[in-house]
Image (cartoon, rainbow, N blue to C red):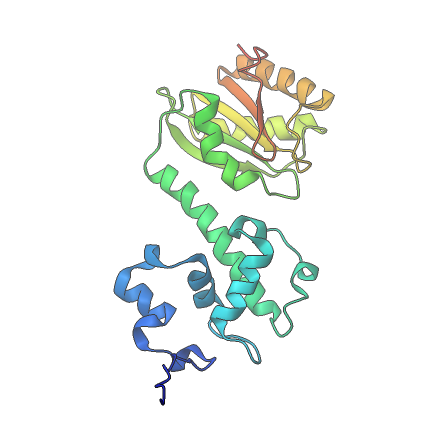
Length: 238
């Protein structure tokens, strides 16, 4: 007895040859970006695949290697070398898209300023932005009299090891924005938020300067890898 064999769907590698409703870009416009998988979103960023591999196949391999978009950020070119044919332009596109996502969160906060009630409120805002940075970055949250955020500013002069320049810039920014109080935040690229001796001394100098200028220093928070240290929570800022 002759059996009828079932024909399976076989798609050509190029996504343009797939059924239209299964292509990531078309699916995005039809259903919305929130309906796409991480692989599909990444495939749209890649736009095209490499020799013998569609954008979807390539995106799937990249996701398998890095696991999350967070892990893709702050990588260097050596981390991508196994993806033969993937040029620097596409790697730059991926990293830029991840950075846009981080900045979007900060812009949202500035548009609808939340009231800061505790260190947890600050960490929720700043942790996603600062935990993966490979260099030490210092930011200040400028607050009004109701503890709502006026602005989030990055300090460019010096580090906690060079206290005077950074303290001067902090209070210049605070006075320019008519801030009633401030919260300082910086990261430890090592991932360990435990304060150094320099962090301790800097915080003492910072609070003294705030008292002189009548700008309350509410906290100094150190961001690590999903961990943080709050000087206020530890009773070192009153």
